[in-house]
Image (cartoon, rainbow, N blue to C red):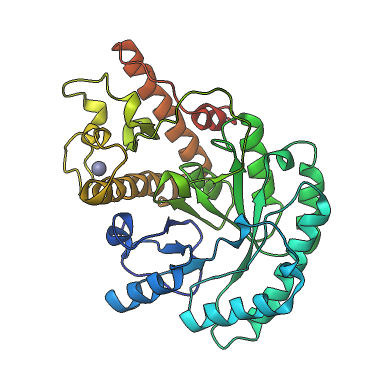
Length: 355
Ligand SMILES: [Zn+2]
């Protein structure tokens, strides 16, 4: 697929953006494709640098990550909301993202986020720089259960374009119920996008989200909520390696028992050029050049998957995505037959079960 010509101000349905905190690694190979959401305190500077470095830089946006904070009352003030719209207009972002606080366990907290978001979108309309705006809404684990219908009704009646961030202790989309709830949510608003997701971003776009972003690192692929510690086992700090054939990121520590040239681990992206991705398992955690290479490989490899699912007008993207998940599960079955068993991530069977 040729991705050279991009409109910088109109969201192209089916875009898969990169969500990154740095301009190196994945971002450095990404500037000519779908676009980047820079996050964190440095996001404005990173966006300006990318524009200066690459004559425009493509579809670029900034995420201030205010949704990670609790509502301490500032959400009701006009000042920060207006300032955020002004700042993003100054940066000429390709889409505006409202400053949202973390949604609490009651429907009232969602309403407060949407009301503040509405004020932000009004402020966006007054800016001379025109681009679509979205209000980030963090979907807590509890919202995917009994409160799902209330949440959908609230979102639908507000009519506000929403950027969903799915939160959990680990993968927030690892069961059929969670995936079905996410599909229902992205369908509950006329304009929805998904931020900071993993490969499920591709699934959610194929099922109706306008666009989605995949995190360059594991910390950016999910919004974590504190969970009670299950045991006192030390945390696994090994690197996450994207294995294209498995359609999954696998911990380096889980790949240590695999020896020799196993075809399933070979990657043909332009970073790997036929080499095995097992070379990324060694560094714990990734640092420096190997980290940049692993990130760049990851972004190029999931771009391939996204293209297969979303780029062919002849194919129903939902069917294509479910086929990708089934292909990932089949690769896991092949490994098991070869005595190299690994456990597939929950999202592969969760999505496959939607057929
Ligand atoms: Zn690769």
